Image (cartoon, rainbow over all chains, first blue to last red; front, side, top):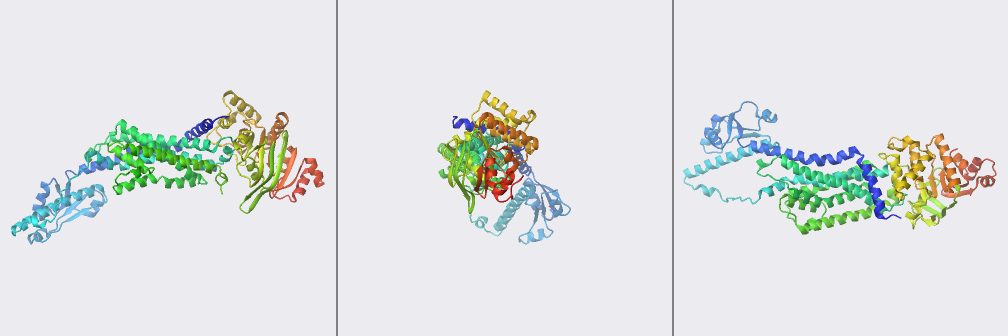
Length: 392
Length: 245
């Protein structure tokens, strides 16, 4: 008689060999892990670049002659002014210019009467570059407007400070690395998702796929316990999930080295230590993702059906990241107890360079692994149910 | 030896098997004949423990399948309803995998592969991946899978479905050899009369989940009062519906 480990190993070895031969599935699993972080960083750094390009902003102006004083003010504030001729709408939509300021001919007259003289700002605020540029122009014109307003009050013998009731003094305590942590939201999502995407194909193939090609029945008539079968398949799925996770962590580290975010005032780097702690902390997540995916897939009658279910399951990491992106949450102990959410909290603290909370890490590792094992027990039970083996 | 005592199995309101008993002795080929939907496959699935009996008991060489599944299936070679091969594995890798599941290792495993191959696998089939195999080729691999551990008891569910004439003849001579030389207990189901009459020493006729008749071919002919076994089948079944020549 052979022990549990023997049967498990035979099962695992077969599944590993079988899955590795599925080249297409391997590509689908590993390519996003390798290239996802690099592409994401490329995007972020190009955003950073367009932000820095806005430094010495060239501003297209219609009717400079109507407001020489305002024009002079803008020049003093680092704007390079150019006369614009043509239709603002078409030029902006064609992305030839990002922002246009029009000074109407009645500007001077209205200005003289001390009434609000209007200017028109054309922009396409759905574009990052245009949004930033028009924001800067707005701020500059508001400043000019306040200065003139204050002068008018002084001329009338009124202290201009009475016009401002509240003054805000903004003090930003965010450190450079903490700011980087927010930028990292997207990268975090990719690393969390790698644990899921890496094993998804194999999870389906070894459960719903096994049913669809009708190889489950022949397998079950061999002297193997359900636990040996389920555990053999599970470890195979987890190996792929973990590999994708490792690749995405490494790729993120490389991407941070390749593309600089310095123009955003941040320059995060991932040390080898940080990479290692990220991987160790994400390992239980790969275990959890594997068993959850197998459970969900087992309910799919066909490969296609299982794929649909998994698509929904794999949205969970995204959901978790978005929840924290849109609502700043204070890290609390219960968060570590929720798989995915807990890993995300830990990731955030690693990426911020704060180091992981040891009790949080322990809680997250233990709870996530236990949940994975509970799901596995359920799987082993389901595997012997007639409904699962024969469907219907 | 395979023994079924008073087996009953229902799915909702449908009674699939109704108080069915069967004994398949060692050194004999036992046939289970019945039209499609008679309950043959359900009976066999209960035999290899994948469906639980509502009533009755099933044992392999005296080992109860429900209470000691792992021990009982070690003594079973099974060619189930579904072939289900792994398309990315070669025939040899299939045999290695299933042989190992039965505890075969090293030289013993290689010897088992060679013995099984000699039954009816051609050499070129052995190291090709199963993807794209014809139905007949797939059946051969599935049969080899059932025989790799040299089981004392062999259960085959409609084994000749989709096999060409040459392969059917090969299978028949193999089953006879296993019976005569190894004294194996062979139980197979079929809805093809010729198959059963050509091979079986003992025949169980099943319809609507119930036993219609059992006995040696001669006994069945006597029972029906017919000279020809196939006429006897039709008479005993009460109809020729759902069975094939």
